[in-house]
Image (tube, rainbow, N blue to C red; front, side, top):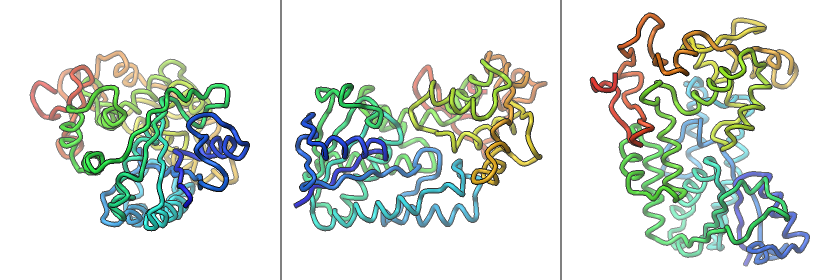
Length: 354
């Protein structure tokens, strides 16, 4: 009976296949051989694009396909580089193995996208075959697996966990929290998690994508604005390179950055230069991704005075430049804020939060 081995991305799957197919005896990969294992990756965008709690696991991709047609603005990824159909096929392959009661090893690493995909996979696999609880194992590695080599791989750092019924119950609660319309359940679970547990770190990273209490910007927006502030006048491709170097947790990649920059421009925190037309940056990249790299390559991103004020802490992102004390956040826009200092979620309209 072949064991299914699921890695968090194509590069980590390729790394494992290399070790296995070359007879590498680096623990714990010595348990895998060409004949006893099937190695694949599963890497949908469950961080910056919407996630849904569907009855059938593959239904999440059907739901996202529907939403892309009627609400494209809620997706940060580029529509014409959407990999959902490809990932849906891989998910179906995983579920086929689940139905046959094959043992499954899921590997996750330090990156947020790996962690949320693990939560989804545990739910998908045990929903279709509850008896697999106990035949699914997690292997957590505290560094990006795809960036390791035979020289840097440290087997002593691998943490193995059996997927017990109790873990399945906790895991499903986390998935429900991540797909909820409010952050209340995620906050409740987060408050009970240990800071060094990957589940607690995952929930914290998602809560950080709420507007932060002081600036009214999400963590991803603050990271991008910080880069622009430090080197204003950056070309788009240079900014993407700096972001990857400084904030490489894979919560967002270069394909989602245009949508985040467009949101910062709408808030008047940045401005574009050398833009070929009046379209937003995401549309420009989508229209030219396959045939005219230079249409977006040289677009400049410059910080505005308001952006500098937000970085310095003298102004909130939701304020007009003429306002200094009162927030203009509306309850319909975002009723929750993340307090980084107190590590908790607060209501946006409480008088102490304005």
